[in-house]
Every structure is written in structure tokens, then in C-alpha cells.
Image (tube, rainbow, N blue to C red; front, side):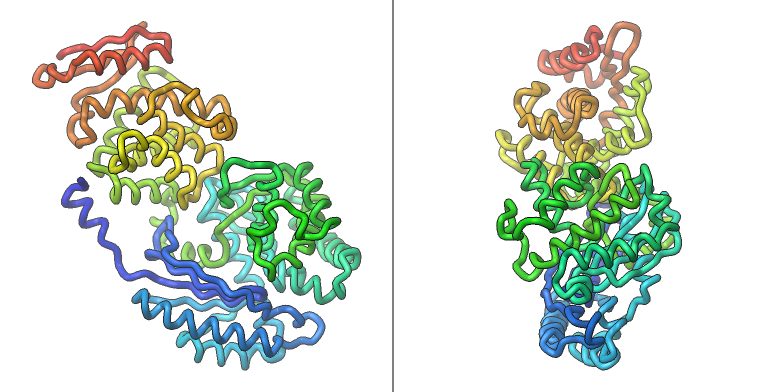
Length: 504
């Protein structure tokens, strides 16, 4: 069980919530708090279509306004029910551009009982970029946030965010301006983007971070078409050549013919082709090395903006893994001791690691014991699913596969035949072998420590000469069982080293 100190850290304050009044949807997301790795505890959206005719009429549609106000009134009650401590209400392009926007914002504030912050295009772009900075490890590329009314583009490199630009290229705006003609919409998009050479010229060979519900929907359909094994949006990457082929298909066929289209709401389906056109033109003009889907955008960017400088510097993956370690492990401190213990072994072996390799190994050590409450026959499977599909940020899909495999092998043994070939392929050869190696270390650590703190620092495992040596102090010599020497032997087999248990 967590220590007394850890149990104290588990106590969290009241949740906070963000209501996002967008051109297509009005959404409520409640989070546990303002942290480096914010975890949603409730998420609800209503597709109101506020921006449906703004581009041509200059006004918010009366029916859309009524739907939005009903949603906001419901969200007010939900926030009261969840005892939310703070509600941030944001409005974007539709309310910003419509002549009756001010009247709507006044009614919206009354409906939700909160002040509404109307974001400028520049601020919307900044928060979108902050969302990507918050959710990706060392991002480098161009963020594109496609909403119903607008497209924001802004450059990011590490934690440095450039000056953003906003254009009226959202799905609803394009549908309106083009009169429903995809050919006309393509001309509008191409002309607008060709004027953005300052942003797109610097995209070549870097990553395009796609933010927004329409692009996430396209990515979901792309996963279905490719029979992709991990149905997680954040961090999903698409090669430009493959992406262009798929986008052309979306533009040519009726949405109802696409595989897994049932997973996309009927209200969003007409916008898929317009989102495909915008992304196609960005790929054609910008020539990025890949498209990375971001599940984090303006809302998470706002939360990131509220963090102090010290908290911003924390690793979101390690923050989330640390939270799970506190909540689910038998001894919270053991996860950090396991990390230190494996560090000493890796240094003794001299196995090269990148900074990203090290942080993934650290996260795996924190997650190593989160499945202990499951039935012994299913601990590996339960841990794999919990990690592979968990709400983690700061990690790509191969990294997810590595973490899931490491903990699976920790419970189920080191044979690669015990797990699906699809997740092994997703991890790749290098990460697959690293997962087996780390699991072999864990399979030694747990019979020694019984997942309790204080033992691993006294029982170091090192490579010395042609041997892999587990050092055990004399007062713990009874730990040196046949089972334990078998675990050391399995590790030695992976590294072509002779096993030894040394009593000190």
C-alpha cells in the first residue's frame, strides 16, 4: 500500500472545468485539477453548428444559438454537481466574427453562470500551440488547429512558440463560402495557404501537429482503413504519402462508404471532406515528414498557461505515470527505487540510451506494479491494456507499445510468442528487445523486494566481466532461492552473461 506520505499526496482538490464554445461544438471538459498531466474526469460535447452560416450571413443561426444556450445551461448544472472549483469559459471564431456575437456571449454568460472569455485569433493559436507543447515530448513543427470557423497555424520548437495566424478555413466556413462545392473549397484553401509562406516554408521535413475534432475523426477512419492495432488518437502519426492517398479517397467518395464511419457523428460527417482538403493542401505546400494527431488543444493549452514555470518543466509522461504509481502500486516509493536500481545496472552494462529511452524506462518502472490487484492469470493482459490505452501524453505509439510490453513480460515471462504480433510490430525491434530486457530486470527485482521499499538499494544488480551479478547482504541470504537464480539466468541469457548471486 502507499506510504503515509504518498497517501497524503493522493488527496486532490476540487476539479476544474473548461467550457469551449466553438464554431461547430460546445464542449464541457472537467479535469482533476491544473496539473502537468491533466486527467479529464468528464467530457461532453453538443454539436450546435454556431458557425454554420456566419461566413455568408455574418450572423449566428438562431436555432444554433438556442441549442448552444441549452447546452450551456446543462453544463452549469453538471459543474455544480461535480463541485467544480473553477470554470473557464472560452469562445472562438463564430462568436468572434458574427454581428450578433456580443448578444450571444451575454446570453451565454447568463446560461452557464460564468464570464465568457472571447479569444482573439492570436490567443486561440497560442493556446493550441501550448496544448501541443503540453502533450508532446520535445515537439518540433507546425501546429494546425482546425475548427468549424477557422484554422490557426503556429510554429513550435520545444517550448518556444512562434507568432500564430488565423484564417477562415474551418469546415463550416468552407462549406458556407463554397456553397457546398468541394472544387471551389479547394481553390479557397489553396489561395489562402499560398499566402502563408512564412509558416509553411518552415514546415518541410518537420512534423505537422493536427488539432481539432474533424482531423481526429479523419485519423480514426484512417486507423480503421489500415487495420491499425492501437485505437488511441493522441500521438498517432501518418506518413504524408499515405495521408494524401487517404485524403483523396475521403474527398471522392460518400462518407457513408468509409470503414468505421459509424464511429463519427452524423453532424460531423459532412465536414470530413473539407477537413481533408485543408490537410491535403498543407501537406502539398508544407511537405512535412509526418502528421501527428494531437488530442490536446486550446483547452489543455489554457491549463498549461496557468502552470507555474517549475511545473511546466516537468515531464507529462512521468507525471502521469507517477500519479498511477501512487494510486495503484503496493509501495509508491518502490517504483522510484526500481528506477534507480535499473539505472545502476544499465550503467554497469554500458548499454547506450537516448534521453527518450531513459524517460521511457523511468515511466515503465513507475507503472510496473499497477496491475497487482488483478487475478494472477490476467495481470499481464490487464496491465498491457491499461498502459496501451491509458490517457498518457508526452509519448508516441511505439513508446506506448514498449511500456505495455515491458509490464506484460514482467508478469507473463519473456517469451515474445505470448503477445500479439501487432503490438510487437508497433513497438519495433529495438523497443521490443528493450522491453524484454527491462522485464527481465523486473522479474528479478520483485522476488527480491516483494514490491516493498528499502530492499532494492541493498541488493544491487550489476554486470561485471562476463557475469551478471545480484549482490545480496548476508542478513537477506535466504532470498537466494532456485527461483531467483533462474530469473538471473534468464537475464544473463539475453545478454550472453553467466548468472551469479553473490552473498556479501
